[in-house]
Amino acid sequence: MSPTSVAPGSVRSAAEVNEEIRALWLRAGGSLSAEERAEYELLVVEWAAAIRGEVVEAA
Image 1 (cartoon, rainbow, N blue to C red):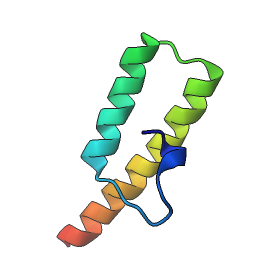
Image 2: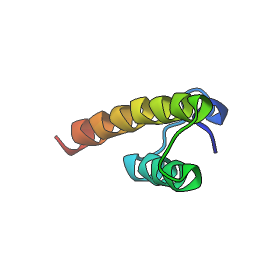
Image 3: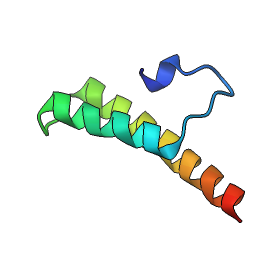
Image 4: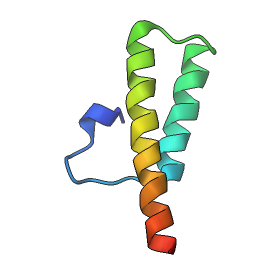
């Protein structure tokens, strides 16, 4: 699932997003194309938001 296909308001856990990041790097063989780099950047932003949400919930 690409980050652009996530429905607005839909929230995935940091673990789910992290798994997608890992899969992207595996598919890319450790070297990202421009398109993969853009996808990676979106995933990192989504992952950071998920982490912040999980920290707030835990507090």
